[in-house]
Length: 401
Image 1: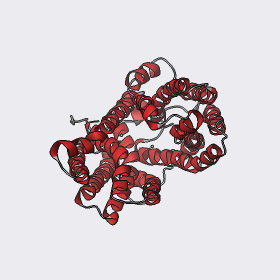
Image 2: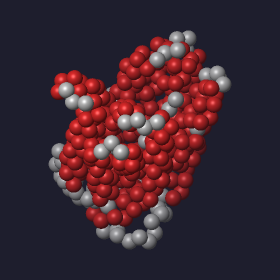
Image 3: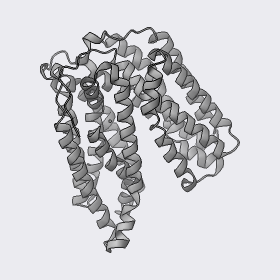
Image 4: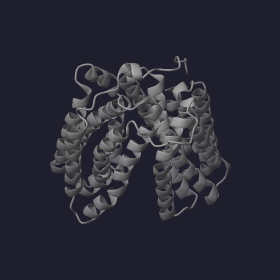
Protein backbone atom coordinates (compact mmCIF):
# COMPACT_ATOMS: atom_id res chain seq x y z
CA UNK A 1 0.00 0.00 0.00
CA UNK A 2 2.88 2.34 0.79
CA UNK A 3 4.41 1.74 -2.63
CA UNK A 4 1.08 2.38 -4.33
CA UNK A 5 0.65 5.63 -2.41
CA UNK A 6 4.12 6.85 -3.37
CA UNK A 7 3.57 6.10 -7.05
CA UNK A 8 0.17 7.79 -6.92
CA UNK A 9 1.73 11.11 -5.88
CA UNK A 10 3.74 11.71 -9.09
CA UNK A 11 0.91 10.18 -11.11
CA UNK A 12 -1.53 12.80 -9.83
CA UNK A 13 1.03 15.56 -10.26
CA UNK A 14 2.04 14.60 -13.79
CA UNK A 15 -1.53 14.02 -14.89
CA UNK A 16 -2.24 17.68 -14.21
CA UNK A 17 1.01 19.39 -15.26
CA UNK A 18 2.44 17.21 -18.02
CA UNK A 19 0.19 18.42 -20.86
CA UNK A 20 0.85 22.03 -19.81
CA UNK A 21 4.59 21.37 -19.61
CA UNK A 22 4.61 19.89 -23.11
CA UNK A 23 2.73 22.93 -24.39
CA UNK A 24 5.24 25.25 -22.71
CA UNK A 25 7.98 23.33 -24.52
CA UNK A 26 6.32 24.26 -27.80
CA UNK A 27 4.82 20.86 -28.61
CA UNK A 28 1.65 21.39 -30.64
CA UNK A 29 -1.70 20.21 -29.32
CA UNK A 30 -2.17 17.47 -31.92
CA UNK A 31 1.20 15.95 -31.04
CA UNK A 32 0.39 16.05 -27.33
CA UNK A 33 -2.89 14.25 -28.03
CA UNK A 34 -1.08 11.70 -30.19
CA UNK A 35 1.45 10.98 -27.44
CA UNK A 36 -1.23 10.33 -24.84
CA UNK A 37 -3.25 8.21 -27.29
CA UNK A 38 -0.17 6.09 -28.02
CA UNK A 39 0.49 5.77 -24.29
CA UNK A 40 -3.06 4.48 -23.76
CA UNK A 41 -2.70 2.02 -26.63
CA UNK A 42 0.57 0.71 -25.18
CA UNK A 43 -1.13 0.28 -21.82
CA UNK A 44 -4.00 -1.71 -23.33
CA UNK A 45 -1.69 -3.83 -25.52
CA UNK A 46 0.54 -4.81 -22.59
CA UNK A 47 -2.21 -5.71 -20.13
CA UNK A 48 -2.85 -9.26 -21.28
CA UNK A 49 0.71 -10.45 -22.02
CA UNK A 50 2.06 -8.93 -18.81
CA UNK A 51 -0.73 -10.48 -16.76
CA UNK A 52 -0.23 -13.89 -18.33
CA UNK A 53 3.54 -13.83 -17.92
CA UNK A 54 3.37 -12.47 -14.38
CA UNK A 55 1.48 -15.61 -13.35
CA UNK A 56 4.45 -17.68 -14.57
CA UNK A 57 7.42 -15.47 -13.75
CA UNK A 58 6.24 -13.63 -10.67
CA UNK A 59 3.83 -10.76 -10.07
CA UNK A 60 6.33 -8.81 -7.96
CA UNK A 61 8.90 -8.99 -10.78
CA UNK A 62 6.52 -7.29 -13.18
CA UNK A 63 5.57 -4.63 -10.64
CA UNK A 64 9.28 -3.97 -10.08
CA UNK A 65 9.92 -3.81 -13.83
CA UNK A 66 7.10 -1.35 -14.49
CA UNK A 67 7.89 0.79 -11.45
CA UNK A 68 11.53 1.03 -12.49
CA UNK A 69 10.52 2.15 -15.98
CA UNK A 70 8.16 4.72 -14.47
CA UNK A 71 11.04 6.19 -12.48
CA UNK A 72 13.10 6.31 -15.69
CA UNK A 73 10.26 8.17 -17.44
CA UNK A 74 10.41 10.96 -14.85
CA UNK A 75 14.18 10.92 -15.14
CA UNK A 76 13.85 11.54 -18.88
CA UNK A 77 11.49 14.45 -18.24
CA UNK A 78 14.03 15.93 -15.84
CA UNK A 79 16.98 15.33 -18.15
CA UNK A 80 15.98 17.14 -21.32
CA UNK A 81 13.44 19.15 -23.27
CA UNK A 82 13.77 17.50 -26.69
CA UNK A 83 10.60 15.98 -28.14
CA UNK A 84 12.07 12.45 -28.55
CA UNK A 85 13.06 12.40 -24.88
CA UNK A 86 9.83 13.77 -23.43
CA UNK A 87 7.83 11.68 -25.90
CA UNK A 88 9.59 8.55 -24.72
CA UNK A 89 8.79 9.54 -21.14
CA UNK A 90 5.06 9.80 -21.92
CA UNK A 91 5.10 6.40 -23.66
CA UNK A 92 6.90 4.80 -20.71
CA UNK A 93 3.97 5.88 -18.57
CA UNK A 94 1.78 3.58 -20.65
CA UNK A 95 4.35 0.81 -20.26
CA UNK A 96 4.22 1.25 -16.48
CA UNK A 97 0.45 0.85 -16.21
CA UNK A 98 0.32 -1.96 -18.77
CA UNK A 99 3.05 -3.89 -16.97
CA UNK A 100 1.97 -3.43 -13.36
CA UNK A 101 -1.83 -3.07 -13.30
CA UNK A 102 -2.86 -6.72 -13.43
CA UNK A 103 0.25 -7.96 -11.62
CA UNK A 104 -0.37 -5.55 -8.72
CA UNK A 105 -3.98 -6.72 -8.32
CA UNK A 106 -2.91 -10.37 -8.35
CA UNK A 107 -0.01 -9.68 -5.97
CA UNK A 108 -2.37 -8.13 -3.41
CA UNK A 109 -4.72 -11.11 -3.76
CA UNK A 110 -1.82 -13.50 -3.18
CA UNK A 111 -0.47 -11.65 -0.16
CA UNK A 112 -3.79 -11.25 1.67
CA UNK A 113 -6.05 -13.97 3.04
CA UNK A 114 -9.21 -14.39 0.92
CA UNK A 115 -11.45 -13.30 3.79
CA UNK A 116 -9.68 -9.92 3.77
CA UNK A 117 -9.65 -9.33 0.00
CA UNK A 118 -12.46 -6.76 0.02
CA UNK A 119 -10.76 -4.70 2.73
CA UNK A 120 -7.37 -4.93 1.01
CA UNK A 121 -8.69 -3.83 -2.39
CA UNK A 122 -10.70 -1.02 -0.79
CA UNK A 123 -7.64 0.24 1.12
CA UNK A 124 -5.56 0.02 -2.07
CA UNK A 125 -8.12 2.13 -3.95
CA UNK A 126 -8.20 4.65 -1.10
CA UNK A 127 -4.40 4.92 -0.95
CA UNK A 128 -4.17 5.45 -4.71
CA UNK A 129 -6.99 8.01 -4.80
CA UNK A 130 -5.65 9.95 -1.83
CA UNK A 131 -2.16 10.07 -3.32
CA UNK A 132 -3.50 11.14 -6.72
CA UNK A 133 -5.58 13.89 -5.14
CA UNK A 134 -2.55 15.11 -3.18
CA UNK A 135 -0.50 14.97 -6.39
CA UNK A 136 -3.11 17.15 -8.09
CA UNK A 137 -2.78 19.68 -5.30
CA UNK A 138 0.95 19.78 -5.93
CA UNK A 139 0.30 20.86 -9.51
CA UNK A 140 0.73 24.49 -8.52
CA UNK A 141 4.31 23.96 -7.40
CA UNK A 142 6.04 24.89 -10.70
CA UNK A 143 4.63 28.44 -10.65
CA UNK A 144 5.19 28.76 -6.90
CA UNK A 145 8.81 27.63 -7.04
CA UNK A 146 9.47 29.89 -10.00
CA UNK A 147 8.37 32.90 -7.95
CA UNK A 148 10.10 31.83 -4.72
CA UNK A 149 13.53 30.81 -6.00
CA UNK A 150 13.67 32.79 -9.24
CA UNK A 151 14.11 29.80 -11.53
CA UNK A 152 12.86 29.83 -15.10
CA UNK A 153 9.51 28.06 -15.18
CA UNK A 154 10.68 25.13 -17.31
CA UNK A 155 13.53 24.49 -14.89
CA UNK A 156 11.11 24.19 -11.96
CA UNK A 157 9.21 21.50 -13.88
CA UNK A 158 12.43 19.58 -14.44
CA UNK A 159 13.37 19.89 -10.77
CA UNK A 160 10.00 18.51 -9.70
CA UNK A 161 10.19 15.68 -12.26
CA UNK A 162 13.55 14.72 -10.76
CA UNK A 163 11.91 14.61 -7.34
CA UNK A 164 9.11 12.46 -8.76
CA UNK A 165 11.70 10.01 -10.09
CA UNK A 166 13.13 9.76 -6.57
CA UNK A 167 9.71 9.15 -5.01
CA UNK A 168 8.98 6.36 -7.51
CA UNK A 169 12.41 4.94 -6.73
CA UNK A 170 11.45 4.68 -3.06
CA UNK A 171 8.23 2.92 -4.14
CA UNK A 172 10.40 0.44 -6.08
CA UNK A 173 12.35 -0.33 -2.91
CA UNK A 174 9.15 -0.88 -0.90
CA UNK A 175 7.86 -3.24 -3.58
CA UNK A 176 11.16 -5.15 -3.55
CA UNK A 177 10.61 -5.79 0.18
CA UNK A 178 7.35 -7.63 -0.56
CA UNK A 179 7.81 -11.39 -0.77
CA UNK A 180 6.89 -13.18 -3.98
CA UNK A 181 4.12 -15.77 -3.98
CA UNK A 182 5.66 -19.26 -4.09
CA UNK A 183 2.76 -20.54 -6.16
CA UNK A 184 3.97 -18.18 -8.86
CA UNK A 185 7.74 -18.51 -8.60
CA UNK A 186 7.63 -22.29 -8.90
CA UNK A 187 5.85 -22.04 -12.27
CA UNK A 188 8.50 -20.83 -14.71
CA UNK A 189 7.34 -22.51 -17.91
CA UNK A 190 6.32 -20.60 -21.01
CA UNK A 191 3.90 -23.35 -21.92
CA UNK A 192 0.22 -23.15 -21.18
CA UNK A 193 0.18 -19.39 -20.68
CA UNK A 194 -3.55 -18.94 -21.22
CA UNK A 195 -5.70 -19.71 -18.18
CA UNK A 196 -7.64 -22.96 -18.47
CA UNK A 197 -9.38 -23.56 -15.16
CA UNK A 198 -11.01 -20.11 -15.20
CA UNK A 199 -11.52 -19.71 -18.97
CA UNK A 200 -15.30 -20.15 -18.82
CA UNK A 201 -15.64 -17.72 -15.91
CA UNK A 202 -13.44 -15.14 -17.61
CA UNK A 203 -15.48 -15.29 -20.83
CA UNK A 204 -18.66 -14.51 -18.89
CA UNK A 205 -16.93 -11.83 -16.83
CA UNK A 206 -15.64 -10.17 -20.01
CA UNK A 207 -19.17 -10.15 -21.46
CA UNK A 208 -20.19 -8.05 -18.44
CA UNK A 209 -17.32 -5.59 -17.99
CA UNK A 210 -17.08 -4.61 -21.67
CA UNK A 211 -20.44 -2.87 -21.18
CA UNK A 212 -19.24 -0.98 -18.11
CA UNK A 213 -16.21 0.17 -20.08
CA UNK A 214 -18.49 1.33 -22.90
CA UNK A 215 -20.61 3.26 -20.37
CA UNK A 216 -17.51 4.97 -19.01
CA UNK A 217 -16.36 5.99 -22.47
CA UNK A 218 -19.79 7.32 -23.40
CA UNK A 219 -20.62 9.29 -20.27
CA UNK A 220 -17.75 9.83 -17.86
CA UNK A 221 -14.66 10.38 -19.99
CA UNK A 222 -16.19 13.48 -21.62
CA UNK A 223 -18.37 14.56 -18.70
CA UNK A 224 -16.49 17.85 -18.06
CA UNK A 225 -17.09 18.74 -21.72
CA UNK A 226 -20.75 17.77 -21.30
CA UNK A 227 -21.08 20.18 -18.36
CA UNK A 228 -19.40 22.93 -20.38
CA UNK A 229 -21.63 22.48 -23.43
CA UNK A 230 -24.85 21.76 -21.55
CA UNK A 231 -24.63 24.44 -18.83
CA UNK A 232 -21.80 26.72 -19.97
CA UNK A 233 -19.72 25.86 -16.88
CA UNK A 234 -15.95 26.22 -17.21
CA UNK A 235 -13.08 24.32 -15.59
CA UNK A 236 -12.76 26.69 -12.64
CA UNK A 237 -16.30 26.01 -11.46
CA UNK A 238 -16.08 22.28 -12.15
CA UNK A 239 -12.67 21.56 -10.61
CA UNK A 240 -13.96 21.41 -7.04
CA UNK A 241 -16.82 19.10 -7.94
CA UNK A 242 -14.58 16.67 -9.82
CA UNK A 243 -12.01 16.73 -7.04
CA UNK A 244 -14.77 15.75 -4.62
CA UNK A 245 -15.82 13.04 -7.08
CA UNK A 246 -12.33 11.56 -6.96
CA UNK A 247 -12.37 11.63 -3.16
CA UNK A 248 -15.59 9.60 -3.05
CA UNK A 249 -13.30 6.58 -3.06
CA UNK A 250 -12.32 7.30 0.56
CA UNK A 251 -15.56 6.09 2.23
CA UNK A 252 -15.25 2.78 0.36
CA UNK A 253 -12.51 1.64 2.75
CA UNK A 254 -15.15 1.47 5.48
CA UNK A 255 -18.33 0.86 3.50
CA UNK A 256 -17.11 -2.07 1.39
CA UNK A 257 -16.13 -4.42 4.28
CA UNK A 258 -19.30 -3.42 6.13
CA UNK A 259 -21.47 -4.11 3.08
CA UNK A 260 -19.77 -7.40 2.17
CA UNK A 261 -20.25 -8.68 5.72
CA UNK A 262 -24.03 -8.10 5.49
CA UNK A 263 -24.99 -8.67 1.84
CA UNK A 264 -24.06 -11.62 -0.39
CA UNK A 265 -21.23 -10.47 -2.63
CA UNK A 266 -22.90 -11.49 -5.89
CA UNK A 267 -25.95 -9.28 -5.20
CA UNK A 268 -24.05 -6.03 -4.85
CA UNK A 269 -22.91 -5.32 -8.44
CA UNK A 270 -26.44 -5.54 -9.86
CA UNK A 271 -27.76 -3.13 -7.22
CA UNK A 272 -24.86 -0.74 -7.85
CA UNK A 273 -25.35 -0.73 -11.61
CA UNK A 274 -29.09 -0.12 -11.27
CA UNK A 275 -28.30 2.90 -9.07
CA UNK A 276 -25.65 4.03 -11.56
CA UNK A 277 -28.20 3.82 -14.39
CA UNK A 278 -30.61 6.02 -12.44
CA UNK A 279 -27.87 8.58 -11.74
CA UNK A 280 -26.98 8.83 -15.44
CA UNK A 281 -30.62 9.54 -16.29
CA UNK A 282 -30.78 12.00 -13.40
CA UNK A 283 -27.73 13.91 -14.62
CA UNK A 284 -29.16 14.08 -18.14
CA UNK A 285 -32.41 15.72 -16.99
CA UNK A 286 -31.04 17.93 -14.17
CA UNK A 287 -32.14 21.56 -14.63
CA UNK A 288 -28.85 23.08 -13.41
CA UNK A 289 -25.23 22.06 -13.10
CA UNK A 290 -25.18 22.03 -9.28
CA UNK A 291 -27.86 19.33 -9.09
CA UNK A 292 -26.19 17.38 -11.90
CA UNK A 293 -22.86 17.60 -10.06
CA UNK A 294 -24.43 16.39 -6.81
CA UNK A 295 -25.88 13.37 -8.62
CA UNK A 296 -22.45 12.76 -10.14
CA UNK A 297 -20.91 12.71 -6.64
CA UNK A 298 -23.39 10.04 -5.54
CA UNK A 299 -22.65 8.01 -8.66
CA UNK A 300 -18.94 8.25 -7.95
CA UNK A 301 -19.48 6.90 -4.44
CA UNK A 302 -21.40 3.80 -5.52
CA UNK A 303 -19.08 3.07 -8.46
CA UNK A 304 -15.97 3.38 -6.30
CA UNK A 305 -17.54 0.91 -3.87
CA UNK A 306 -18.18 -1.52 -6.70
CA UNK A 307 -14.56 -1.54 -7.93
CA UNK A 308 -13.06 -3.48 -4.97
CA UNK A 309 -16.20 -5.63 -4.80
CA UNK A 310 -15.74 -6.72 -8.42
CA UNK A 311 -12.05 -7.36 -7.78
CA UNK A 312 -12.94 -9.45 -4.75
CA UNK A 313 -15.57 -11.35 -6.76
CA UNK A 314 -13.14 -12.21 -9.54
CA UNK A 315 -10.09 -13.01 -7.41
CA UNK A 316 -12.19 -15.27 -5.17
CA UNK A 317 -13.28 -17.39 -8.15
CA UNK A 318 -9.98 -17.67 -10.01
CA UNK A 319 -7.22 -20.12 -9.00
CA UNK A 320 -4.16 -18.39 -7.50
CA UNK A 321 -1.91 -19.33 -10.42
CA UNK A 322 -4.27 -17.60 -12.91
CA UNK A 323 -5.02 -14.38 -11.02
CA UNK A 324 -2.61 -12.21 -13.00
CA UNK A 325 -4.07 -13.41 -16.29
CA UNK A 326 -7.61 -12.92 -15.00
CA UNK A 327 -6.93 -9.36 -13.84
CA UNK A 328 -5.22 -8.52 -17.13
CA UNK A 329 -7.96 -9.97 -19.34
CA UNK A 330 -10.76 -8.29 -17.41
CA UNK A 331 -9.04 -4.90 -17.42
CA UNK A 332 -8.15 -5.16 -21.12
CA UNK A 333 -11.77 -5.93 -22.04
CA UNK A 334 -12.97 -2.99 -19.93
CA UNK A 335 -10.38 -0.72 -21.59
CA UNK A 336 -11.51 -1.91 -25.02
CA UNK A 337 -15.07 -0.82 -24.29
CA UNK A 338 -13.88 2.51 -22.90
CA UNK A 339 -11.65 3.15 -25.93
CA UNK A 340 -14.27 2.50 -28.61
CA UNK A 341 -17.08 4.77 -27.37
CA UNK A 342 -15.77 8.33 -26.67
CA UNK A 343 -15.70 9.17 -30.39
CA UNK A 344 -19.41 8.37 -30.64
CA UNK A 345 -20.11 10.50 -27.56
CA UNK A 346 -18.11 13.34 -29.08
CA UNK A 347 -20.15 13.23 -32.29
CA UNK A 348 -23.39 13.40 -30.30
CA UNK A 349 -22.15 16.35 -28.25
CA UNK A 350 -20.98 18.13 -31.40
CA UNK A 351 -24.49 17.69 -32.83
CA UNK A 352 -26.09 19.13 -29.67
CA UNK A 353 -27.58 15.78 -28.59
CA UNK A 354 -26.51 16.27 -24.97
CA UNK A 355 -28.71 13.58 -23.45
CA UNK A 356 -27.79 10.86 -25.97
CA UNK A 357 -24.38 9.86 -24.47
CA UNK A 358 -25.80 9.60 -20.94
CA UNK A 359 -28.81 7.60 -22.05
CA UNK A 360 -26.64 5.28 -24.13
CA UNK A 361 -24.36 4.82 -21.12
CA UNK A 362 -27.41 4.01 -19.00
CA UNK A 363 -28.43 1.30 -21.49
CA UNK A 364 -24.90 -0.13 -21.39
CA UNK A 365 -24.93 -0.15 -17.59
CA UNK A 366 -28.28 -1.95 -17.51
CA UNK A 367 -26.88 -4.48 -19.99
CA UNK A 368 -23.99 -5.14 -17.60
CA UNK A 369 -26.36 -5.61 -14.67
CA UNK A 370 -28.59 -7.97 -16.65
CA UNK A 371 -25.67 -10.07 -17.92
CA UNK A 372 -24.13 -10.27 -14.47
CA UNK A 373 -27.41 -11.55 -13.04
CA UNK A 374 -27.78 -14.11 -15.84
CA UNK A 375 -24.18 -15.28 -16.14
CA UNK A 376 -22.35 -14.70 -12.86
CA UNK A 377 -24.76 -14.38 -9.95
CA UNK A 378 -24.66 -18.13 -9.30
CA UNK A 379 -20.90 -18.57 -9.69
CA UNK A 380 -19.61 -19.95 -6.38
CA UNK A 381 -16.29 -18.84 -4.89
CA UNK A 382 -13.43 -21.31 -4.69
CA UNK A 383 -13.07 -23.05 -1.34
CA UNK A 384 -10.91 -21.08 1.04
CA UNK A 385 -8.56 -24.02 1.39
CA UNK A 386 -7.69 -23.75 -2.31
CA UNK A 387 -6.78 -20.08 -1.95
CA UNK A 388 -3.80 -20.22 0.38
CA UNK A 389 -1.48 -17.42 1.34
CA UNK A 390 1.63 -19.40 0.53
CA UNK A 391 4.17 -16.93 1.92
CA UNK A 392 3.72 -15.45 5.41
CA UNK A 393 3.13 -11.71 4.99
CA UNK A 394 6.03 -9.40 5.79
CA UNK A 395 5.78 -5.87 7.11
CA UNK A 396 6.31 -3.44 4.24
CA UNK A 397 6.34 0.16 4.66
CA UNK A 398 -2.87 0.06 -7.15
CA UNK A 399 -8.11 1.67 -15.35
CA UNK A 400 -13.96 2.00 -13.12
CA UNK A 401 -16.39 -0.66 -13.18
